[in-house]
Length: 182
Length: 182
DNA sequence: CTGAACTTTCAGAAGTTTCTGAACGAACTA
DNA sequence: TAGTTCGTTCAGAAACTTCTGAAAGTTCAG
Image 1: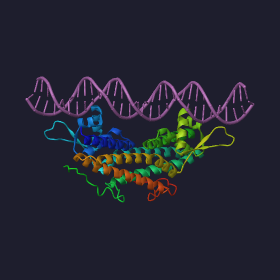
Image 2 (image 1 turned 45 degrees about the vertical axis):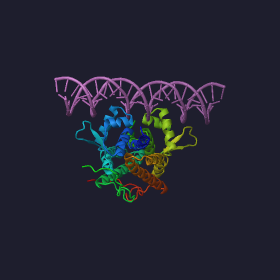
Image 3 (image 1 turned 60 degrees about the vertical axis):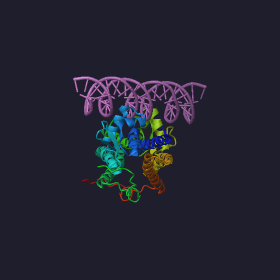
Protein backbone atom coordinates (compact mmCIF):
# COMPACT_ATOMS: atom_id res chain seq x y z
CA UNK A 1 0.00 0.00 0.00
CA UNK A 2 1.38 3.34 -0.96
CA UNK A 3 2.16 6.08 1.46
CA UNK A 4 -0.43 8.37 -0.09
CA UNK A 5 -3.17 5.83 0.47
CA UNK A 6 -2.06 5.36 4.07
CA UNK A 7 -2.12 9.06 4.71
CA UNK A 8 -5.50 9.42 3.08
CA UNK A 9 -6.88 6.69 5.28
CA UNK A 10 -5.44 8.29 8.38
CA UNK A 11 -7.04 11.63 7.57
CA UNK A 12 -10.29 9.94 6.63
CA UNK A 13 -10.59 8.19 9.96
CA UNK A 14 -9.66 11.35 11.83
CA UNK A 15 -12.38 13.32 10.10
CA UNK A 16 -14.91 10.51 10.28
CA UNK A 17 -14.43 10.24 13.99
CA UNK A 18 -14.69 13.99 14.52
CA UNK A 19 -17.93 14.14 12.57
CA UNK A 20 -19.05 11.06 14.47
CA UNK A 21 -18.66 13.03 17.67
CA UNK A 22 -20.69 15.91 16.31
CA UNK A 23 -23.44 13.60 15.22
CA UNK A 24 -23.40 11.85 18.56
CA UNK A 25 -24.07 15.18 20.26
CA UNK A 26 -27.11 15.44 18.06
CA UNK A 27 -28.42 12.20 19.48
CA UNK A 28 -27.46 9.79 16.71
CA UNK A 29 -25.04 6.93 16.72
CA UNK A 30 -21.44 7.72 16.02
CA UNK A 31 -21.44 5.17 13.23
CA UNK A 32 -23.93 7.25 11.23
CA UNK A 33 -21.58 10.19 11.23
CA UNK A 34 -18.59 8.10 10.35
CA UNK A 35 -20.20 6.41 7.38
CA UNK A 36 -21.61 9.63 6.02
CA UNK A 37 -18.19 11.23 6.31
CA UNK A 38 -16.38 8.52 4.38
CA UNK A 39 -18.94 8.82 1.60
CA UNK A 40 -18.75 12.59 1.66
CA UNK A 41 -14.98 12.66 1.44
CA UNK A 42 -14.91 10.01 -1.25
CA UNK A 43 -17.18 12.00 -3.52
CA UNK A 44 -17.87 8.97 -5.65
CA UNK A 45 -20.39 6.40 -4.51
CA UNK A 46 -18.97 3.50 -2.56
CA UNK A 47 -20.22 -0.01 -2.01
CA UNK A 48 -21.25 -1.39 1.35
CA UNK A 49 -18.33 -3.76 1.46
CA UNK A 50 -15.92 -0.93 0.69
CA UNK A 51 -17.34 0.99 3.65
CA UNK A 52 -17.28 -2.09 5.84
CA UNK A 53 -13.63 -2.49 5.16
CA UNK A 54 -12.62 1.12 5.53
CA UNK A 55 -14.36 1.52 8.88
CA UNK A 56 -13.78 -2.01 10.17
CA UNK A 57 -17.42 -2.61 10.90
CA UNK A 58 -19.41 -5.79 10.59
CA UNK A 59 -21.65 -6.22 7.60
CA UNK A 60 -24.66 -6.25 9.87
CA UNK A 61 -23.83 -2.96 11.48
CA UNK A 62 -23.14 -1.42 8.09
CA UNK A 63 -26.45 -2.62 6.72
CA UNK A 64 -28.36 -1.11 9.62
CA UNK A 65 -26.37 2.08 9.53
CA UNK A 66 -26.96 2.60 5.83
CA UNK A 67 -30.65 1.90 6.29
CA UNK A 68 -30.89 4.53 8.98
CA UNK A 69 -28.90 7.04 6.95
CA UNK A 70 -31.28 6.55 4.06
CA UNK A 71 -34.28 7.01 6.30
CA UNK A 72 -32.87 10.36 7.28
CA UNK A 73 -32.24 11.11 3.61
CA UNK A 74 -28.63 11.76 4.38
CA UNK A 75 -27.28 9.07 2.12
CA UNK A 76 -28.64 7.99 -1.24
CA UNK A 77 -28.60 4.61 -2.89
CA UNK A 78 -27.09 4.72 -6.34
CA UNK A 79 -27.59 2.15 -9.00
CA UNK A 80 -24.74 1.55 -11.37
CA UNK A 81 -25.64 -0.10 -14.62
CA UNK A 82 -23.77 -3.31 -15.04
CA UNK A 83 -22.83 -3.49 -11.38
CA UNK A 84 -24.47 -6.02 -9.19
CA UNK A 85 -23.69 -4.29 -5.93
CA UNK A 86 -25.42 -1.24 -4.67
CA UNK A 87 -23.53 1.98 -4.16
CA UNK A 88 -24.08 4.80 -1.78
CA UNK A 89 -23.34 8.47 -1.87
CA UNK A 90 -23.60 11.25 0.68
CA UNK A 91 -26.23 13.92 0.53
CA UNK A 92 -24.43 17.24 0.72
CA UNK A 93 -27.33 19.60 0.98
CA UNK A 94 -27.09 20.70 4.57
CA UNK A 95 -30.51 22.31 4.64
CA UNK A 96 -32.11 19.11 3.50
CA UNK A 97 -30.45 17.14 6.23
CA UNK A 98 -31.03 19.55 9.07
CA UNK A 99 -34.62 20.34 8.22
CA UNK A 100 -35.47 16.69 8.02
CA UNK A 101 -34.12 16.08 11.48
CA UNK A 102 -35.77 19.16 12.92
CA UNK A 103 -39.10 18.37 11.31
CA UNK A 104 -39.25 14.74 12.25
CA UNK A 105 -37.51 14.58 15.55
CA UNK A 106 -37.11 17.92 17.32
CA UNK A 107 -40.56 19.09 16.41
CA UNK A 108 -42.08 15.97 17.85
CA UNK A 109 -40.55 16.02 21.27
CA UNK A 110 -40.90 19.74 21.76
CA UNK A 111 -44.59 19.33 21.13
CA UNK A 112 -44.76 16.43 23.57
CA UNK A 113 -43.08 18.57 26.23
CA UNK A 114 -45.42 21.46 25.54
CA UNK A 115 -48.47 19.26 25.80
CA UNK A 116 -47.41 17.81 29.11
CA UNK A 117 -46.75 21.28 30.49
CA UNK A 118 -50.18 22.40 29.38
CA UNK A 119 -51.75 19.44 31.07
CA UNK A 120 -49.83 20.19 34.25
CA UNK A 121 -50.94 23.82 34.17
CA UNK A 122 -54.52 22.64 33.86
CA UNK A 123 -54.12 20.52 36.94
CA UNK A 124 -52.41 23.23 38.93
CA UNK A 125 -55.23 25.66 38.27
CA UNK A 126 -57.41 23.53 40.49
CA UNK A 127 -54.93 23.48 43.34
CA UNK A 128 -55.94 26.36 45.60
CA UNK A 129 -52.99 26.22 47.96
CA UNK A 130 -50.18 28.72 48.22
CA UNK A 131 -47.85 26.04 46.87
CA UNK A 132 -50.16 25.44 43.93
CA UNK A 133 -50.37 29.07 42.95
CA UNK A 134 -46.63 29.56 43.12
CA UNK A 135 -46.00 26.48 41.01
CA UNK A 136 -48.57 27.49 38.44
CA UNK A 137 -46.77 30.77 37.78
CA UNK A 138 -43.54 28.93 37.18
CA UNK A 139 -45.14 26.19 35.13
CA UNK A 140 -46.63 28.84 32.89
CA UNK A 141 -43.20 30.32 32.37
CA UNK A 142 -41.83 26.94 31.37
CA UNK A 143 -44.79 26.49 29.08
CA UNK A 144 -44.14 29.79 27.39
CA UNK A 145 -40.61 28.63 26.66
CA UNK A 146 -41.89 25.45 25.12
CA UNK A 147 -44.30 27.44 22.99
CA UNK A 148 -41.52 29.76 22.01
CA UNK A 149 -39.37 26.83 20.96
CA UNK A 150 -42.19 25.31 18.99
CA UNK A 151 -42.77 28.59 17.20
CA UNK A 152 -39.11 29.00 16.35
CA UNK A 153 -38.99 25.49 14.94
CA UNK A 154 -42.08 26.02 12.83
CA UNK A 155 -40.85 29.31 11.48
CA UNK A 156 -37.47 27.78 10.80
CA UNK A 157 -39.04 25.00 8.79
CA UNK A 158 -41.40 27.36 7.01
CA UNK A 159 -38.46 29.46 5.88
CA UNK A 160 -37.36 26.53 3.74
CA UNK A 161 -33.73 27.41 4.19
CA UNK A 162 -31.13 27.62 6.90
CA UNK A 163 -30.73 31.28 7.54
CA UNK A 164 -27.05 31.48 8.11
CA UNK A 165 -26.77 34.73 6.27
CA UNK A 166 -24.51 37.06 8.12
CA UNK A 167 -22.06 34.31 8.62
CA UNK A 168 -21.40 34.41 4.92
CA UNK A 169 -20.71 30.81 4.54
CA UNK A 170 -23.48 28.78 3.10
CA UNK A 171 -24.20 31.08 0.23
CA UNK A 172 -20.97 30.68 -1.61
CA UNK A 173 -20.39 27.07 -0.81
CA UNK A 174 -17.06 26.17 -2.33
CA UNK A 175 -18.69 23.48 -4.39
CA UNK A 176 -16.15 20.75 -4.31
CA UNK A 177 -15.09 18.88 -7.38
CA UNK A 178 -18.25 16.85 -7.12
CA UNK A 179 -19.84 15.77 -10.32
CA UNK A 180 -23.43 16.93 -10.51
CA UNK A 181 -26.06 14.29 -10.05
CA UNK A 182 -29.32 14.02 -11.79
CA UNK B 1 -53.42 13.15 52.14
CA UNK B 2 -55.62 15.88 50.77
CA UNK B 3 -56.78 16.08 47.20
CA UNK B 4 -54.91 19.33 46.64
CA UNK B 5 -51.64 17.71 47.63
CA UNK B 6 -52.30 14.77 45.35
CA UNK B 7 -53.00 17.02 42.43
CA UNK B 8 -49.93 19.09 43.13
CA UNK B 9 -47.82 15.99 43.14
CA UNK B 10 -49.31 14.78 39.90
CA UNK B 11 -48.57 18.07 38.17
CA UNK B 12 -45.12 18.18 39.71
CA UNK B 13 -44.18 14.79 38.31
CA UNK B 14 -45.62 15.64 34.93
CA UNK B 15 -43.54 18.80 34.69
CA UNK B 16 -40.47 17.19 36.19
CA UNK B 17 -40.56 14.47 33.61
CA UNK B 18 -41.10 16.87 30.73
CA UNK B 19 -38.13 18.96 31.82
CA UNK B 20 -36.21 15.74 32.30
CA UNK B 21 -36.76 14.98 28.63
CA UNK B 22 -35.54 18.40 27.60
CA UNK B 23 -32.45 18.04 29.69
CA UNK B 24 -31.81 14.59 28.33
CA UNK B 25 -31.76 16.02 24.82
CA UNK B 26 -29.03 18.31 26.05
CA UNK B 27 -26.95 15.32 26.99
CA UNK B 28 -27.57 15.20 30.71
CA UNK B 29 -29.30 12.59 32.78
CA UNK B 30 -33.04 12.86 33.12
CA UNK B 31 -32.70 12.84 36.88
CA UNK B 32 -30.89 16.18 36.81
CA UNK B 33 -33.83 17.82 35.10
CA UNK B 34 -36.35 16.21 37.38
CA UNK B 35 -34.64 17.27 40.58
CA UNK B 36 -34.08 20.81 39.36
CA UNK B 37 -37.75 21.04 38.41
CA UNK B 38 -39.05 19.95 41.79
CA UNK B 39 -36.85 22.54 43.44
CA UNK B 40 -37.86 25.18 40.93
CA UNK B 41 -41.57 24.57 41.40
CA UNK B 42 -41.26 24.41 45.16
CA UNK B 43 -39.66 27.80 45.37
CA UNK B 44 -38.48 27.16 48.90
CA UNK B 45 -35.36 25.10 49.52
CA UNK B 46 -35.95 21.41 50.07
CA UNK B 47 -33.90 18.78 51.85
CA UNK B 48 -32.33 15.82 50.09
CA UNK B 49 -34.65 13.38 51.83
CA UNK B 50 -37.68 15.41 50.78
CA UNK B 51 -36.51 15.18 47.17
CA UNK B 52 -35.70 11.51 47.52
CA UNK B 53 -39.23 10.86 48.65
CA UNK B 54 -40.98 13.03 46.08
CA UNK B 55 -39.12 11.49 43.16
CA UNK B 56 -38.80 7.97 44.54
CA UNK B 57 -35.07 7.85 44.05
CA UNK B 58 -32.45 6.15 46.19
CA UNK B 59 -30.41 8.29 48.54
CA UNK B 60 -27.30 7.45 46.58
CA UNK B 61 -28.71 8.60 43.29
CA UNK B 62 -29.96 11.79 44.90
CA UNK B 63 -26.59 12.52 46.40
CA UNK B 64 -24.86 12.12 43.08
CA UNK B 65 -27.50 14.07 41.23
CA UNK B 66 -27.33 17.00 43.64
CA UNK B 67 -23.56 16.98 43.43
CA UNK B 68 -23.71 17.20 39.65
CA UNK B 69 -26.35 19.91 39.70
CA UNK B 70 -24.17 21.96 41.99
CA UNK B 71 -21.15 21.47 39.76
CA UNK B 72 -23.20 22.94 36.96
CA UNK B 73 -24.27 25.76 39.29
CA UNK B 74 -27.87 24.95 38.57
CA UNK B 75 -28.76 24.20 42.15
CA UNK B 76 -27.45 25.91 45.27
CA UNK B 77 -26.87 24.52 48.71
CA UNK B 78 -28.62 26.53 51.36
CA UNK B 79 -27.74 26.54 55.02
CA UNK B 80 -30.54 27.02 57.45
CA UNK B 81 -29.52 28.15 60.90
CA UNK B 82 -30.66 25.69 63.49
CA UNK B 83 -31.27 22.95 60.92
CA UNK B 84 -28.97 20.03 60.80
CA UNK B 85 -29.86 18.99 57.28
CA UNK B 86 -28.79 20.77 54.17
CA UNK B 87 -31.29 22.35 51.86
CA UNK B 88 -31.20 22.97 48.17
CA UNK B 89 -32.75 25.53 45.91
CA UNK B 90 -32.92 25.92 42.17
CA UNK B 91 -30.97 28.51 40.28
CA UNK B 92 -33.46 30.39 38.14
CA UNK B 93 -31.13 32.59 36.14
CA UNK B 94 -31.34 30.99 32.74
CA UNK B 95 -28.36 32.83 31.33
CA UNK B 96 -26.19 31.62 34.16
CA UNK B 97 -27.17 28.02 33.52
CA UNK B 98 -26.89 28.05 29.77
CA UNK B 99 -23.65 29.95 29.58
CA UNK B 100 -22.05 27.62 32.05
CA UNK B 101 -22.95 24.60 29.97
CA UNK B 102 -21.90 26.23 26.73
CA UNK B 103 -18.62 27.44 28.18
CA UNK B 104 -17.60 24.23 29.83
CA UNK B 105 -19.00 21.55 27.61
CA UNK B 106 -19.97 22.71 24.14
CA UNK B 107 -16.94 24.91 23.78
CA UNK B 108 -14.66 22.03 24.65
CA UNK B 109 -15.86 19.48 22.18
CA UNK B 110 -16.29 21.93 19.34
CA UNK B 111 -12.67 22.85 19.81
CA UNK B 112 -11.68 19.20 19.85
CA UNK B 113 -13.53 18.62 16.60
CA UNK B 114 -11.96 21.67 15.03
CA UNK B 115 -8.48 20.58 16.05
CA UNK B 116 -8.92 17.14 14.59
CA UNK B 117 -10.19 18.58 11.34
CA UNK B 118 -7.19 20.88 11.18
CA UNK B 119 -4.87 17.96 11.72
CA UNK B 120 -6.61 16.00 9.01
CA UNK B 121 -6.34 18.91 6.59
CA UNK B 122 -2.62 19.06 7.33
CA UNK B 123 -2.28 15.42 6.45
CA UNK B 124 -4.36 15.69 3.29
CA UNK B 125 -2.19 18.49 1.98
CA UNK B 126 0.58 15.98 1.54
CA UNK B 127 -1.58 13.54 -0.37
CA UNK B 128 -1.02 14.34 -4.03
CA UNK B 129 -3.65 12.06 -5.46
CA UNK B 130 -6.92 13.06 -7.05
CA UNK B 131 -8.70 11.50 -4.11
CA UNK B 132 -6.59 13.51 -1.70
CA UNK B 133 -7.26 16.82 -3.36
CA UNK B 134 -10.99 16.25 -3.49
CA UNK B 135 -11.12 15.27 0.15
CA UNK B 136 -9.05 18.26 1.17
CA UNK B 137 -11.56 20.65 -0.32
CA UNK B 138 -14.37 19.01 1.58
CA UNK B 139 -12.40 18.72 4.79
CA UNK B 140 -11.71 22.43 4.60
CA UNK B 141 -15.42 23.08 4.29
CA UNK B 142 -16.11 21.00 7.36
CA UNK B 143 -13.34 22.84 9.12
CA UNK B 144 -14.86 26.18 8.28
CA UNK B 145 -18.10 25.04 9.88
CA UNK B 146 -16.28 24.05 13.02
CA UNK B 147 -14.56 27.42 13.10
CA UNK B 148 -17.86 29.13 12.53
CA UNK B 149 -19.41 27.24 15.42
CA UNK B 150 -16.49 28.06 17.65
CA UNK B 151 -16.81 31.72 16.79
CA UNK B 152 -20.53 31.77 17.46
CA UNK B 153 -19.99 30.15 20.84
CA UNK B 154 -17.29 32.60 21.81
CA UNK B 155 -19.32 35.60 20.76
CA UNK B 156 -22.34 34.20 22.55
CA UNK B 157 -20.37 33.87 25.75
CA UNK B 158 -18.76 37.27 25.35
CA UNK B 159 -22.15 38.91 25.03
CA UNK B 160 -22.79 38.01 28.66
CA UNK B 161 -26.47 37.50 28.04
CA UNK B 162 -28.79 35.32 26.08
CA UNK B 163 -29.96 37.45 23.25
CA UNK B 164 -33.52 36.37 23.00
CA UNK B 165 -34.71 39.84 22.15
CA UNK B 166 -37.10 39.74 19.28
CA UNK B 167 -38.92 36.91 20.89
CA UNK B 168 -40.07 39.35 23.56
CA UNK B 169 -40.14 36.81 26.25
CA UNK B 170 -37.33 36.93 28.69
CA UNK B 171 -37.61 40.59 29.43
CA UNK B 172 -40.95 40.49 31.08
CA UNK B 173 -42.97 37.93 32.93
CA UNK B 174 -45.09 35.76 30.74
CA UNK B 175 -48.64 36.49 30.00
CA UNK B 176 -50.78 33.49 30.54
CA UNK B 177 -52.34 32.19 27.41
CA UNK B 178 -50.16 32.84 24.49
CA UNK B 179 -49.86 31.51 21.13
CA UNK B 180 -51.54 31.18 17.96
CA UNK B 181 -50.49 28.59 15.53
CA UNK B 182 -51.74 28.02 12.12
C1' DC C 1 -32.65 -24.74 -11.62
C1' DT C 2 -28.19 -23.96 -9.35
C1' DG C 3 -24.75 -21.44 -7.44
C1' DA C 4 -22.33 -17.07 -6.71
C1' DA C 5 -22.52 -12.45 -5.02
C1' DC C 6 -24.38 -9.53 -2.23
C1' DT C 7 -27.80 -7.72 1.44
C1' DT C 8 -30.75 -8.02 5.39
C1' DT C 9 -32.24 -9.83 9.68
C1' DC C 10 -31.89 -11.01 14.32
C1' DA C 11 -30.54 -13.48 18.63
C1' DG C 12 -27.24 -13.18 21.60
C1' DA C 13 -22.72 -10.78 23.04
C1' DA C 14 -20.48 -6.87 24.45
C1' DG C 15 -20.30 -2.37 25.93
C1' DT C 16 -22.13 1.62 28.33
C1' DT C 17 -24.86 4.23 31.48
C1' DT C 18 -27.48 4.75 35.50
C1' DC C 19 -29.30 3.15 39.84
C1' DT C 20 -29.49 0.72 44.28
C1' DG C 21 -28.44 0.01 48.87
C1' DA C 22 -25.26 -1.21 52.33
C1' DA C 23 -21.23 0.53 54.48
C1' DC C 24 -18.68 4.23 55.93
C1' DG C 25 -17.96 8.91 57.65
C1' DA C 26 -18.93 13.37 59.55
C1' DA C 27 -21.38 16.34 62.69
C1' DC C 28 -23.71 16.93 66.42
C1' DT C 29 -26.26 15.72 71.15
C1' DA C 30 -26.99 13.83 75.39
C1' DT D 1 -18.46 7.91 74.79
C1' DA D 2 -22.52 6.21 72.62
C1' DG D 3 -26.23 7.19 69.84
C1' DT D 4 -28.66 9.73 66.18
C1' DT D 5 -29.05 11.89 61.89
C1' DC D 6 -27.58 12.89 57.48
C1' DG D 7 -24.53 12.69 53.55
C1' DT D 8 -21.33 10.30 50.48
C1' DT D 9 -19.17 6.52 48.23
C1' DC D 10 -18.87 2.54 45.54
C1' DA D 11 -19.39 -2.37 44.08
C1' DG D 12 -22.51 -4.77 41.91
C1' DA D 13 -27.26 -4.95 39.65
C1' DA D 14 -30.26 -3.50 36.24
C1' DA D 15 -31.42 -1.27 32.13
C1' DC D 16 -30.35 0.16 27.87
C1' DT D 17 -27.66 0.62 23.48
C1' DT D 18 -24.95 -1.01 19.88
C1' DC D 19 -22.39 -4.59 17.51
C1' DT D 20 -21.32 -9.23 15.72
C1' DG D 21 -21.77 -12.96 12.78
C1' DA D 22 -24.28 -16.67 11.06
C1' DA D 23 -28.43 -17.79 8.71
C1' DA D 24 -31.94 -16.55 5.62
C1' DG D 25 -33.22 -13.80 1.74
C1' DT D 26 -32.67 -11.73 -2.89
C1' DT D 27 -30.98 -11.25 -7.44
C1' DC D 28 -29.06 -12.68 -11.38
C1' DA D 29 -25.99 -15.30 -14.79
C1' DG D 30 -25.33 -19.45 -16.89
